[in-house]
Length: 350
Ligand SMILES: C[S@@+](CC[C@H](N)C(=O)[O-])C[C@H]1O[C@@H](n2cnc3c(N)ncnc32)[C@H](O)[C@@H]1O
Ligand code: SF4
Ligand code: SF4
Image (cartoon, rainbow, N blue to C red; front, side, top):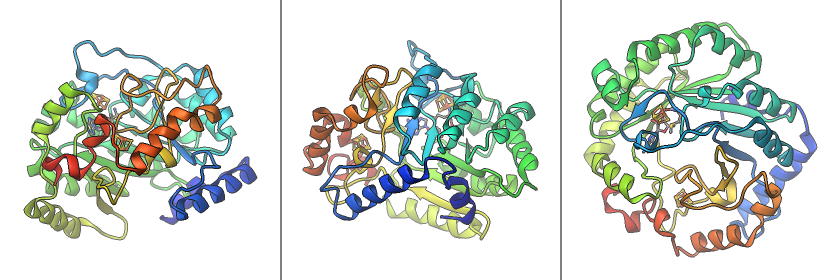
């Protein structure tokens, strides 16, 4: 963890509740989660499923996809149920800044000593919106950079404007450059066959903009939906092919420096030994307030643990349904929608 990240995450309120819960979580983790006597330390919260882009690999682009905004009251209920949280990530299906209440959400979380991170498509980062994010002490901003040329970027990110996203990213950097306590500034690049040839140029561009780090995501999910698994499996690169991996390694060593880190996101490349830990670590909260076990699924139509507006989060977290789901993952008795994350079931990834 970098010093900036550490400082941005230090809770300013409800410190004892958070520390006590964090210690219980860590103890459970080192004992291979034999006990479950804590609540999650982080959560992904979906502010909206609405978006101004129609990326080719994203289910938001399905013809009948329905846009929902999370109600402020739902968000407030979630946060007041979860004072132990250290951090939330406001992201999910959709573009977080489309929900006009996003700034109030960040502010409300701050009142509970919870740091907020956002991942966005960069299109709405004008000076006014950036100022509002900074006023509310955003801990981290990630921008999706899926190409280094206008053609490749806009072919994937349909309805986007490459020049605007890049110029907005430069503006964010400029407005935060001299701030002592500024948010971390990260780039996220989802790699598939159509932008694989640009991985070197993407790193070069992100370094030039001044991001603190860049993460390559090398596997497209289908969110447990047959039609999207089929579409996205065809576009996936084969990261575990030695040549492909070496190409990433070469880019990483070429551009990494003390103030620009690059990595490949491998946490969803699981095996029976290296099991999924999402259901013990965190939860995903949909725009309607449904609890889903992870962001790889991120859709209560696939699996739904219960709704935060109807039950307490604690009841959902300790429910028989959640316990049984954890039990299945521990024993490698995977649900169909989990199989795509595992080597043993998905040869394309390996
Ligand atoms: C779903 S988006 C939501 C936030 C915002 N709209 C954005 O694009 O950054 C979060 C990230 O997921 C990536 N993504 C989209 N579809 C994906 C898929 N099928 N599998 C894996 N990542 C995907 C996006 O490129 C983006 O970096
Ligand atoms: S910008 Fe984000 S949410 Fe919108 S379509 Fe693209 S990946 Fe999906
Ligand atoms: S294994 Fe299942 S719970 Fe874990 S990340 Fe994959 S889909 Fe989510």
